[in-house]
Amino acid sequence: MNISRTLATARRVLRQLSHDPRTIALLLIVPCALLLLLYFVFDASPQAFDGIGASLLGIFPMVTMFLVTSIATLRERTSGTLERLLSMPLGKADLILGYALAFGLLAILQASAATALAVWALDLDIAGSAWLLLLVALLDSLLGTALGLFVSAFAASEFQAVQFMPAVIFPQILLCGLFAPRDTMQPVLEAISNVLPMSYAVDGMNEVLHHASVSGDFVRDTVIVAGIALLVLTLGAATLRRRTP
Image 1 (cartoon, rainbow, N blue to C red):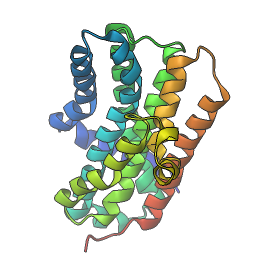
Image 2 (image 1 turned 30 degrees about the vertical axis):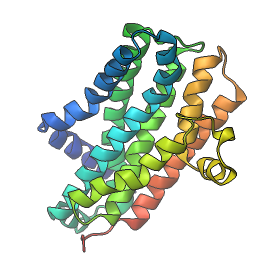
Image 3 (image 1 turned 45 degrees about the horizontal axis):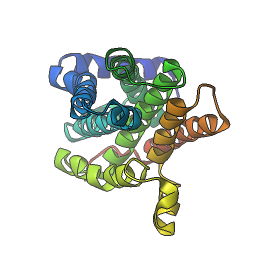
């Protein structure tokens, strides 16, 4: 791995994204717009918004980062850009980390905008610090980025990349504890939810929602989300191919 090549890859990705306003809008505006919509849905019941808003503050950024990252990476492969890059002295780790760094910077902006909107504009009532909420939202965005980079290796077209969303993201949304406490699910479903990263993302958000101080469960949840993101990035580098079959 070469740090200068990694940074050069990140700069190239950011330059490309700067010329794609629709992608920037999807990353930065859509999560905020969805939170705003949810706020008005629960306008007559602010407590309901407090209960579900924190969880969705972690889910929305993860979903959008997954979608944009998987499609953007696949576009590099199908256009032949990936093959040309890997014919140069650029390692797979340099490429994956460059993409992760570029989208990670966008994830910081995305998580910051969504958290600021929820806490200061929509009055999301949390017991803990807004900075902890931002930390979990950022880790969730980075996890979505890592998952998007990983699944792009198994798609042959942008349409196939989008198809991975119901396969990878939707089951996690159903089993993460958003609709029902995980310990009340059928034992098999609870066991599955215990290995899904979104479950710990939602648990981390709920810890900030209900506890004023940093708890052991919060540390566990954030470490698990960060560890899974790192593991998925490593797998993404290992499965990176020069060509799309």
